[in-house]
Image (cartoon, rainbow, N blue to C red; front, side, top):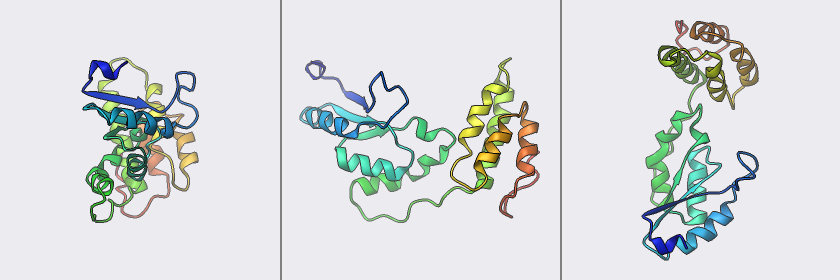
Length: 179
């Protein structure tokens, strides 16, 4: 019925309303829907559980969608988009260079602190506690991440955030003058 209206683009999320943010996105359902849509001039985009560009490549190849939407995969990971050109080449099965290198813990901390400072500058009366969940998203996939999250969830200012980062054992290249 929707395709009869000839939309330019359809985005398909791989979860039901009842699932909300839980469970795995159903990329098989996205693939089946994409097959129907691809018989038209409508572009089809898939969405769900895309936390890395390697996930994007795998899902595009399997489902044959024209593209993807990345939501939660970018929370605390704005670097995901550094590999966009690499992913496009991979999806097209073109020879590519290696993907961009992983982001260091130090860079994660520096960007998280910058984010906290921007939040304070733009919050307009919103309490700093609202920033804590964002800080937690930066802290995944490295040794000591759970401890770092726990400490960040008690912060009330960007100054507190800087103090947490200053006490962590980070690689030598990290700028310790974060505060």
